Length: 318
Length: 288
Image (cartoon, rainbow over all chains, first blue to last red; front, side, top):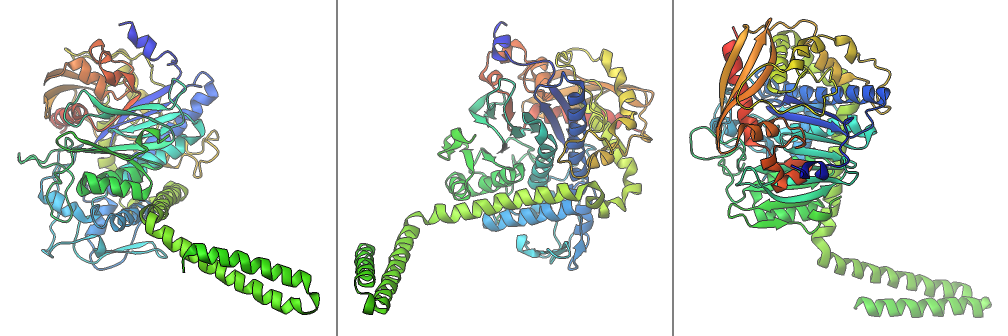
């Protein structure tokens, strides 16, 4: 088809483009151009190697699917301050800040509720996990205490932290930091993106937003530069058992949030974008958009009836 | 008293104060200063009244900007903290378990490499090779090792290339190559060996099932591909999606759609999840 070359006239063969399977999804790193210089090519390969390395590192630390991960070892100790690594401390601290800001609509303590709802399968091995917790009633983010001086985390009650959204965002942001010297690059972790500089065309990256009901269509597209774009949809990771529950639970009720089909957030960091997408999913369209406007980020929310709600600056985010 | 009245009063008092001070030097110093002080007090009242008024109007955005910047700052600070701590310190607690975890991590790395259909992908995190941009799509109907895929184990076995002391690291790389240490860790001794052969597995998605194959030679994964798709979409279309390569190698049917006009798509694809599941299933048969 003659359109293809015309669509990507400036696409050059010296782009660095690589895809690896990590964190239960596919991670693509794309650095635009300048690869013809052998030294530059070496530099960016090394940087991309470190970027992929961060994904692996964060996954090891923050997964709740591996009993020996630092996160799950923390879960095993209730009531005592546990010294943790910088990765875990920062991820939990940020998750708690978003929980506070969203008044509990985002809550990292939903881990056990997710296990009970069937989100307990490790994607790389298919193994299921089950954390035995003493029944202690409902838990919330207020049951987690941080000590900034000693970098310790104390769980006041038995609970399982789910850092899914924040951890993936953190990995994307760290990868972006590794690639910053190259200016124009893209990181795609299963549809959660960070776009640095400009795309191959020399203009800000053109980003499609997946249609929540039609897998091969877009519902909108944006021009983005130096921003993260994260989308949460009810089409992701359906719960086994056939009740069509999806992976975002309302922490306040313990069941899948239903008033939203997908949420897209454009923010300076992927951590923030991913966490706010989850929060808005629970809050619903009206409150979600209010949250975005209050926080100064851009967002698009699509309802199950395909009504679209967007912040005013969604198309001018770059 | 309204803010307009307060402002008018401020201006009048200021003029009177200045003229008294300038025009009557003999008694004007104290009186003028007193009048000016009064003017300043009135001005402060006016400003306060004004800010309260504004707060009522723009309360949400004003508060929001503050919160926003704090959340953005917090996320940036978190990224910096983790980045600066680098690999040595972030790994502190987890490293104690490194010995027990070695097998698992290596297995994960190999699985990771296997799932990507491109050549030279196992443990690519440590030694990424420049992927040929013209890599063809995965063959939709048959699974055979790609010509270049045989290189995968060899590339993965080259730990020297990801030396953490690489002098060419970008200037702001605080711990040069730090995460690469971790990525490289499983490489020197690949303990998980799969049984040689070609294995098939199914992955499920809402749109139907995907079958994938994995080829194991000498205990290592040399290639993987989509075999068949019982979905609404063709194998070649799904192959283009699971490759996650920015939609540059799209078949014609997709070029005709608007998604071909964008560089990347935000929102996870079910087809890639299904492919991941299929590979996992295939590898479980290859394991001992």
